[in-house]
Length: 158
Image (cartoon, rainbow, N blue to C red):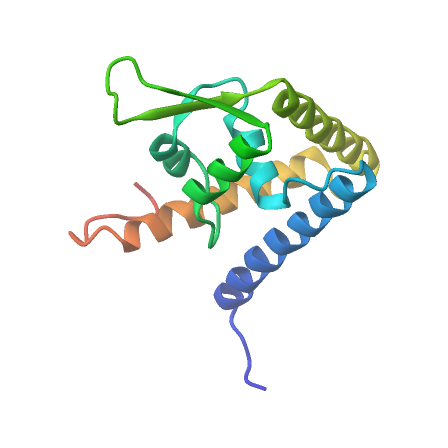
């Protein structure tokens, strides 16, 4: 095995954390007897929140690794988690929002987040450490976004 660098370790850790969180969410759905929506769809639903969005807006807003947002939205509409309607201004555009069933699931996920935050209290995962980690991840996000800026002008310190 080759030695890894902190940069490469970070990339792997972000991917592992994302997968672990999706597993945690899947366990929560299973515990609550929710079988007609998967963990990725649940996060898409959660990120819609109280907004009314197009699939395009949803795609831009969220980070759904390897996810086909259009397919997932279609399944959530079929299973009653989302309501959809054509845009008044652009008949080609369809807007989605949470249905009552979707709101119930969003509230369940919010409760899970609250429970997790309560469990974290008093551990080494202090609010300050989490804030520091979030700031570091924002810098990484900005760095990676700059790598797709082909002008070569983007910088982590901008």
